[in-house]
Image (tube, rainbow, N blue to C red; front, side, top):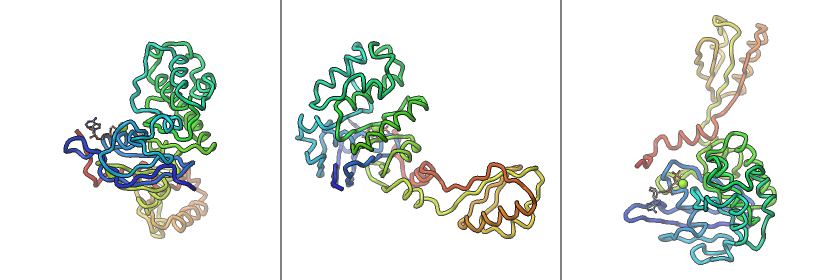
Length: 307
Ligand SMILES: Nc1ncnc2c1ncn2[C@@H]1O[C@H](COP(=O)(O)OP(=O)(O)OP(=O)(O)O)[C@@H](O)[C@H]1O
Ligand SMILES: [Mg+2]
């Protein structure tokens, strides 16, 4: 698989501050790659350097074979860009804004198709200024799609979306990835990253502190599995079960949690114990920590940069 983006030792300074402090990564064609990290970590700075919207201080950057500092129109023709905060003219209607942005591209999607993709059918002829926050964000997302781009940059694309709109935009991004488009996104929603991204990089203080598939990050963070269930009555005795388990047992009232390094054996003990007694273990779950748990664990020891 060819690399769509290659970055080596990227640095961006603002005065004495190093917003991006020596990051290296590569993103393959057709990948969905997510940057995660706390406010001020350097996500927008990094992504806007890739887009050609900001100059880098030093480092090597190649995006679809272009140096974004000099790639110009030919390069931008292949990019779809959703900025964290866009400067679109709010006096124009949704359709007018999309027509305007669309005219800059050689390959264009029909405006009505794009309006449908982001679910703004009923708002096409309304002025942007009159839209709700989430609807305005959908216009931003639409702007990233009008040029039918090979490479799509999405800086917190779903911030302000209602849960239904967020799910639909996930489908949209999945579909773009299915068509072989490369997607680079940032998000503070870890479930979004988990759903969409093949790989993620966690930035903190301008550095990449972890990178890999969501599953790799989860596995690196937690070696233990949590088994939870609900006992039928408050005073059902766990009795001889406790002695047979490897994991630690905690419980509040009927809710029992067992955190264990040996989930297969412990689960076998628990279920056979319950079956012998004719107990139905309501709400039985077996889970490893999710990406959010891994992310929070990773950053817990790091000095985060809060202004
Ligand atoms: N134009 C600028 N001038 C000076 N400092 C800047 C400028 N742009 C960004 N910074 C600083 O660079 C750092 C990284 O900012 P950036 O916008 O890349 O963070 P981010 O990871 O996108 O955060 P968020 O999650 O809040 O969007 C911050 O400390 C910010 O204050
Ligand atoms: Mg940002």
